[in-house]
Amino acid sequence: MENDGKANCTKVLNREDWTASSLPFQLSVAALKEEIDIVVDLIPQVKNIGFELSNFRQWPVFRFIKDNAEFNDALEKNYGERLSKAPRVLEEAKAPDVGELTMH
Image 1: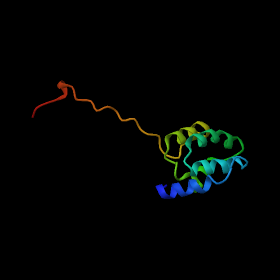
Image 2 (image 1 turned 45 degrees about the horizontal axis):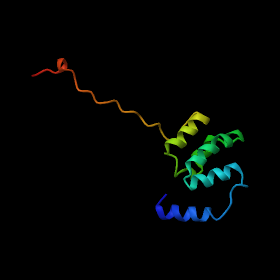
Image 3 (image 1 turned 120 degrees about the horizontal axis):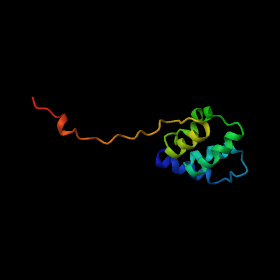
Image 4 (image 1 turned 180 degrees about the horizontal axis):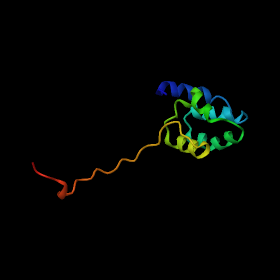
């Protein structure tokens, strides 16, 4: 989310107390505010009440955090899948053995 858009969104959302709202609504608010720790804490709770992985893919509120590693780790732990691919660990570039080098 752009800085101005994020600031305005957070300002509007902070005007309300969302604690009495349903878990999916609290999850959506936390996602919009990019409060990853709260999102991660809520994922197992919403799964337990039937919130499906497809909701994370389809609901636009998760667009802003879909590439966050912690978010994806929590999805993988609870649903067995990620929204974005896991980061790949690059193999260290190895210098060839001297015996492998040949001169032509």
